[in-house]
Length: 298
Image 1 (cartoon, rainbow, N blue to C red):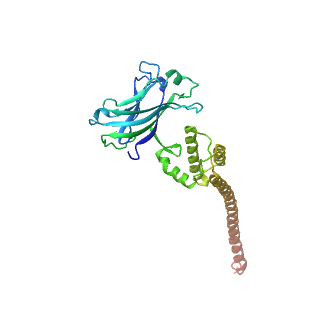
Image 2 (cartoon, rainbow, N blue to C red; image 1 turned 45 degrees about the vertical axis):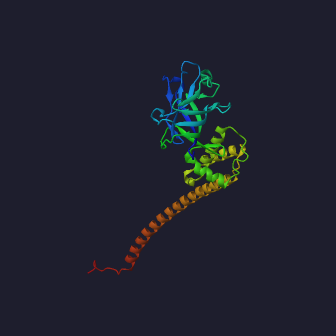
Image 3 (cartoon, helix red, strand yellow; image 1 turned 90 degrees about the vertical axis):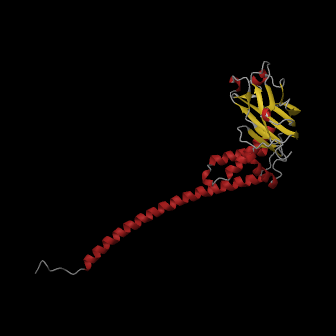
């Protein structure tokens, strides 16, 4: 099936509780050269459940005989990370007669709206879909498209954005022990920690004058949090110490430069005063060396 036969995406629905539409669909995304989208009935479609399903986005325009065997899971993300996300796992054949699949009874609306559940935070509902096309009949020449939904990929148990893939892969290759002892199994926390690690690296790659002591203190606290979680980051701690030393030397150097500039300013003023006194003294000396005038006598 190739490298694009599996994807994980996050669909963020804002102002979920105030939506008035009967049906809502995500932007289309491409898996195994076939367009897909997530669809939901926010008000339940005559039942007290969020009706959520996966659909082939352009099924009406596809050639006859196409089918896709897909293993997929649809989850309502628990944003407080205390409880598990609600998840529905399926493996289905998608085709002309069945372009969409989902299960209506998995996500009770009263549970989603409950303040204690963690599924709806600040009016935002997050739906995570993991899709793997197992088999395909009928070639569909569909290219990747730009989408507003967030696509993530799995790297050693961390869900990453495509833009993070290369850096994290190189990082794990150079330091394979980074997450060998990480204690949390929660995928959201693991991904959050990895994003924090990348942010720390990006912070320490800045020029020393771009960082404040507060920035370094916050970086040290974040590093401590990750170390307590089981990350092995001795190499990053050394970089943080190196940056703190460079920052200290930079500040000391700037202070000394200002002191020398002030000294030089004083010296320049003294030189200017001495030059003025010298000029005056030379004039007086010339006057003293001049012969006496007898113009007033003769």
